[in-house]
Image (spheres, rainbow, N blue to C red):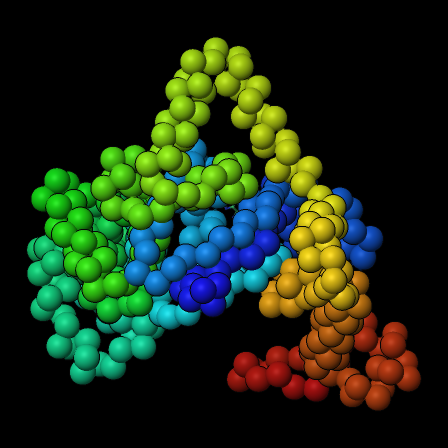
Length: 359
Ligand SMILES: Nc1ncnc2c1ncn2[C@@H]1O[C@H](COP(=O)(O)OP(=O)(O)OP(=O)(O)O)[C@@H](O)[C@H]1O
């Protein structure tokens, strides 16, 4: 049944503005005439469903959008368009994901568990198990910023599997551990599978994918290239990797450039129009398709961009704030300044011998 899914992702896109510096970002924020900023579409319309108890693998070359998708599903970052329905609590394990560098391992355990909704008593009850699974010795009392990536992964994995999530998202976390820890994680994942939990498993290791996943989604430069049973998708992906490896250095560069250019040139309005057209063809009797699709695209997302009106309002508030501060410093009353703005340049306040501000 279509409603049986645990996770549904529909027409999900993710756009990044490519500012070179922070000051460029700030200038663009206050600019009233929007200069075109280079964009990059990390995801260009992903739709898929994940069933309860299923382990779905995410594969694809570096930068194809796997982490972006898993971060959107786990709620770490918002999508630009589209609908994401996650029916249950998620716990994401990526190398160091959600760990605070300045806090010790122990403090991180408590913080992450509290954020997952556990009480202090429940955390006390789990602490020994989490510590023993992570097995990082005295590093537990050190700030996480001093950890190696393997240690971060151990701690992150241990916390994530012990807070008992419905949905486990594992993003490359097994790639940095040693063999013993790797085996422990694989056993834990197998245990989760038998308990019927839903797992998203992101990995470059096709062997791990083949061993653990029921189905696989191949993400290819922001698109869902293939979704299907593990054997077929992994076979097709291997063929692509072989094809790519056989290219000359120049051809490889050209191919990558072409794919990245397509991600920069992606037209969200044209994509939306194509979704409307597909839907009309599939279901000619359906009414108000364009309006429905628009709602599905933007109904559940908060715009990350401010409208011109909001920017003008922010600018006005900041100016008023600056004026109030300056009026205060100048020692004049607000009504004086309003009736005679030039009084602002004549500061009447001074600091007396006790260090207090006097008018
Ligand atoms: N904050 C950001 N700003 C701009 N671009 C970003 C940002 N985060 C990710 N990207 C870009 O989005 C694309 C997808 O990145 P993502 O990390 O999802 O890929 P991935 O498939 O997980 O890669 P990998 O296998 O290397 O981990 C990349 O081209 C990346 O450079």
